[in-house]
Length: 210
Ligand code: ADP
Ligand code: ZN
Image 1 (cartoon, protein in one colour):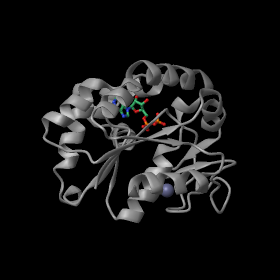
Image 2 (cartoon, helix red, strand yellow; image 1 turned 45 degrees about the horizontal axis):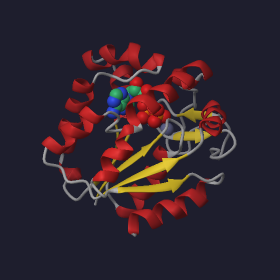
Image 3 (cartoon, rainbow, N blue to C red; image 1 turned 135 degrees about the vertical axis):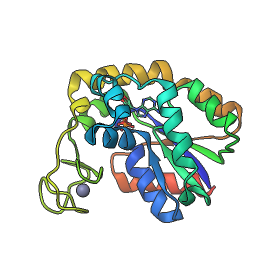
């Protein structure tokens, strides 16, 4: 199964993608995580992306398209994958089509902007393994410590309120048009994000299995 998870920043698509990924035993490919990883290890691509990511802007299309092309060529993608955070623009979606990749379904997780602003401020991430938590909705077993690897959780620079506003604007301007793009292809399924993660998961799994 080849899936795309669409949604505003902080809508919870990453969390849902991880769950579905385990359920279907296919990898989740998060361009955000790949870029942050490159930034941390100081690669050339990471340096190029730094300004964009930290100010809440999109990294240039050619950079992320290159990342995705390399990643999808790896062996673990042969039986399917979930794309989390890609495509984020129409040219990125067109590039995916040109690669000959046939997506089965696009799951769009919808959450209102004001809810997102509140959620994102409580988000905490693991700098070592990329796992994501929330101070209210998805607490780690021990406060401030990653369940998976034990590292100390941090707040992402781009999760600060002003940057979140910018990211929402970018989402509405550049990413939301993808809904029409995939609806026209008959692939879009909308999931209304719920207050409880588990409730959203039920709807997401139903959307994937429908
Ligand atoms: P979120 O979904 O919470 O916004 P991500 O981790 O997916 O967070 O993305 C964080 C940042 O990484 C984006 O704001 C952007 O700067 C960059 N990024 C990730 N994916 C893409 C993409 N497909 N195109 C352009 N920039 C991207
Ligand atoms: Zn971790």
